[in-house]
Image (tube, rainbow, N blue to C red; front, side, top):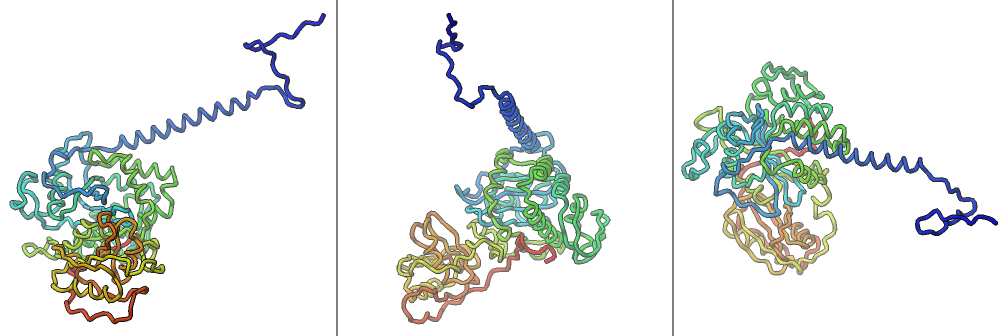
Length: 493
């Protein structure tokens, strides 16, 4: 009698027979591959974690909140971001989080980077170190502004570090500073070397023993040591002023942006790590500006075209009491107003995104369907009425007028959420105007008219044929020119 087959499963059932032609062999090789893959995934994740931990740990953080003034400018929620960048000749706060430890260092370069709320443009403002400005005596934030004294700008960092510099900038400009970062020169050299060098253009030969730099005229690719000498050259190049050096620094920063874009730095882990490691090892920031926040900021501006990154120097003139020092001109007030109002200070270049030239496409909203508020920011009586009349003739409905105390240059067309097409129609009437979104406006398009505004022109989809009335109020000339260099300009320009 044949022996019955025994079940080999815990449930007592017999195993199912494999279909004909199908092997019942196990696949140990496949299991090994899966296991190795899982291990590699864990290792990769751990490596990323270690890199992140190391880079984040490189950064020195300083708490300056207790040293900031109590009457700071108002911070606009979900608005623009202003970051104070300081190039220093020493490692600020080395091994400590004490705000007082930053005193005594010297600031060689001071920049305010303004990132617009919509991240469509970035303005980097250079503040000359020789500027004579008002600041709190002994960097005491409790001293009322009425008792501030005129001192050389870079004395603020030497006396009170980032906190005193922030108090001085905010008190003199009304621009709220969200974060600060201090980079020492060793980190600067490392970042340049991590990029593989940065191209520069020298119209004339440079021979500066103090900067340890000799270069013939022409184009060069500088390593970190040479680049540091290049941006610090002062006494043997140009007029020997800080203003000449700032121009070279701005041209150099433009080249850095171009080089990072050309080499796809963000897509090259090998180069990116070297760049970030050099940067973070020499970086001191406020307590809330960590690697995660920096990543978020970088991500938010990744679609900002290089043509929409502008480098500007605070407009200055000779300081009467000392010809070796400078003071800010009236145009500086225009610059700071533009930053407070989140307006670009330079027209986008030809390489800017199509959204920067909103009147190229056909207009889709009729003037009859648009409410417009014309705001006179020139102080000239009757100017808003002239502009309103020129708009009404073209069929714009519900045009109202107003005025403000600020004195910006140019024309800004502001519009509420979903009103961009209506704003394009309005902007077509104002040559050279700048458009920006303002969620507080609702369905009204606000036109702020400042000094230097051009006369209203006919829009392509105007209603009626009555000619535009002749203006009666004069438009004042711009308060001063603000020269901007965009990051896409040729390095030899």
